[in-house]
Length: 171
Image (tube, rainbow, N blue to C red):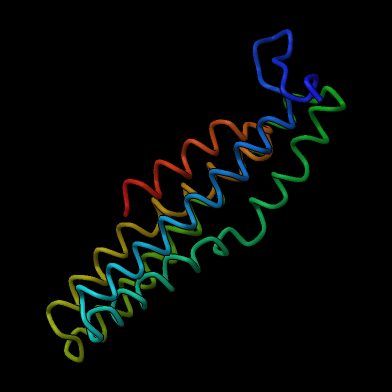
C-alpha cells in the first residue's frame, strides 16, 4: 500500500496519488459550483437567474465545439508517447489547439452575429451579457483544451489545481 503513495525517482507522484488528488479536487470543485448556484439563485431572483442559466448553458456547450479534437488528443497522445513518437504527439497537440481556437472563435462570431441581428428584441442587459459571452467563449474553450491536454499528458496534479482554483475563484 505504501508503494502506491510513493514518489517516483523523477520527483513525480505515483499515478494512484495523482488520481486520488484529482478525484478529490473534482468532487470539491463540484461542491463549490453547487454552492455558487444556490447562492446566485437566492440573490439574483428568477429573471436574472434565468439569464445566468442561459449563459451557463451556452458556455457548457462550448466543450463540444472542438468536434472531438480534444478526445482524439486524449486518446492518441499517450499512445504515441508510449511508442516514443514524441514529435507526432506534439503535432497532434498543436493541431488540437488550432482546431479549438478556430472553431470556438467561429462559434463566438456566429453568436455575435445572431445577437447583433436580434439586438432590437433584447434588453440592454441581455445584449451586454451575450456580448460578454462572445468574449468568454473562446477563452473557455481553450480552458477545455488545456484540461484535455493535461489529461493526455497524465498531469492530474496540475489539472486538479486548475479545477479547484477555477471553482474557488468563480464561487
